[in-house]
Length: 234
Image (cartoon, rainbow, N blue to C red; front, side, top):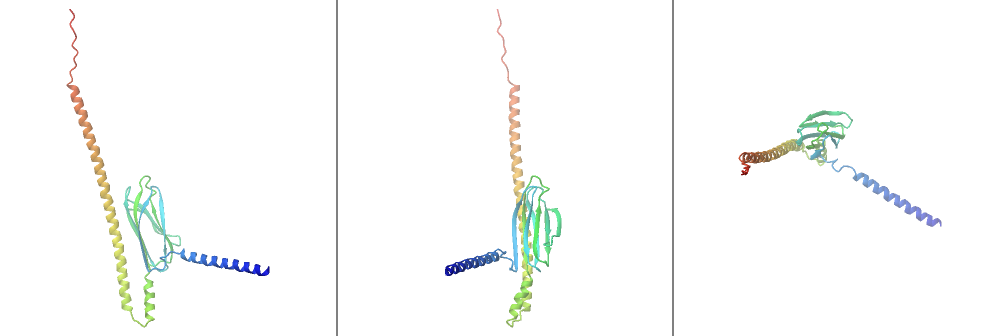
C-alpha cells in the first residue's frame, strides 16, 4: 500500500513539473518577438469610424529611438486628432486636429507608448489614416562592436560607417513613408473628384433631358386644336 502511494505521489509530482515547464515556455513565447531586434518599422492603414478614437500601443526598449507619424488619406475634411502618451502617463505630443503630424523621442526611458488617433469631431464621416511607427536601437551596434573587439579586431571605423549608413537608411525609410502617404492621399483625392464629376454630370444630363421633354410636351399642347363644332338644327 505504501509503495502504491509512493508511485502516485511520483506521478503527481511529474505532472506538476511538466505543467510548470509548459507555463514557463508559454510565458516566454508571449513576449513580443521584435523586442530584441535592433530596428522595427511598421506601416499601417487604419479606418477610424466617425465619432471614435483608436489608440495603438508600441513597446520601446530603454535608450531606443521612437518615431510615430500619421497622415489622413481619405474621408471628411481630411483631418484627425493625434496625441502620443509617454509610458510614464504624460502627454508628450499634445492633441492636435491636423491632416498630418509626427513625434520623435531620441532616447526613450522604455515602456509602452500610446499613439491615439481621434475622429470624435467628425460625426458622420470615417477617416482612412496611414500610421507609421519605428523603434531603432542604436546602442546594439556598440554591443556588436564589443563582441568583435573580443576577437582582437579593430573595427571602430567600420562600425561608425555602419551606424552612419543605418541612420541614412532610416531617414530614407521615413521619407519613403511620407512619399507613399502623399501618393495615396493624392490618388484618393483624384478618385473622389472623379466620382463627384461623374455623379453631377449624370444629374445634369437627366435634368436637361427632363427639361427638354417638358418643353416639347407643353409646346405641342399649345398647338392642339379641339374640334367643338356644333350641328345646325333646321
